[in-house]
Amino acid sequence: MDLHGFGASALAFVVAFVAAGLFTVIFKIVYQWVTPYNEAKLIREGNVAAALALGGALVGYVLPLASALSNTVTLLEFCAWAALAGVLQIAAFTLVRVVVMKDVTARIEKGEVAAGVYLMSISLVVGVLNAACMTA
Image (cartoon, rainbow, N blue to C red; front, side, top):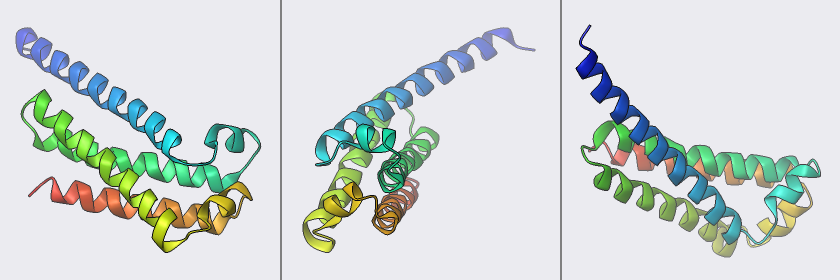
């Protein structure tokens, strides 16, 4: 076993994992700041719609991060794709809220699961398309 090679690979793994984790935490904070409702409070109160919407946004964000980790060479390149993925997820939520389903905020706050599933689905679709485009 080549310990030097393993050490270099392990270090690259740790750097990539930490970078992806930090971007995910930053995305979650920004996403919750952009949404007009308080996901943490709603989820603590048992609001399934809010949990679905936030969970979908997180998975929809992490999908392209995984693709970027597989397809980029440098940390800087990964950071650029990670930032773009976050912008696209925020834009998708904003588009739904402003154009497609203007009452989505009230529906999430009321705990309407259909609205949560819809937001989750949009986030996943954006994430899958984003991830696929990063491989081209």
